[in-house]
Image 1 (cartoon, helix red, strand yellow):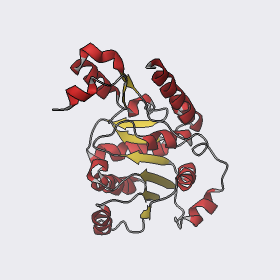
Image 2: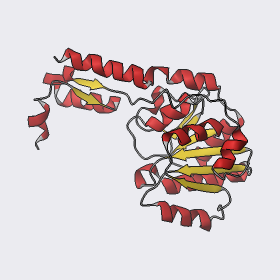
Image 3: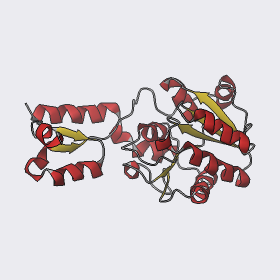
Image 4: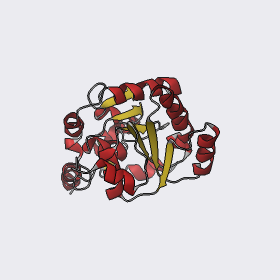
Length: 240
């Protein structure tokens, strides 16, 4: 009710979703020029391809050695679909048994997610690391084979940018603006389904046919903190 009153007093409105930006432009055509899509950005000084010893990194996090390492970074809340994540992984290990899932993050659904893991007998295959600093996440991205995202909805998820900046391919549900950087056959795969079997097949495909870390990094070069914040600064100056 109060949105029309306040929004028309703003000189510039930044929206982190292209669809959202178009929605507001259509809703307020008289001020449509004030709405600007602002992409998410990543810290290029933290997230990049590092020369690290994989085994040393794995040992530091007590992660067992396996053929493939799948990484999930996010809140364990309904929007992130943690139960679907476990269902997908359960199908992945049936095709690629030597695969480990590492989960970074906390949330109200953590205990139920752990219970689901135990129910499926995946205790030795799923590692819960809890919250980690961004430097630690960057290390994990550098030793993993794939980042997975099965969210119900997102804007432009920063974790996808961070993973690609580290040369790590991404398999994700088709949410938000992931299509700007995740390209099938180049930097991972976008799945137009919430069917765990469909997602699991995509994961296995990317694991068996790894993307070029160069293409992953190239896909996000325009979304570094320097580039996006420079764009933001220039847009703000236009309002003065």
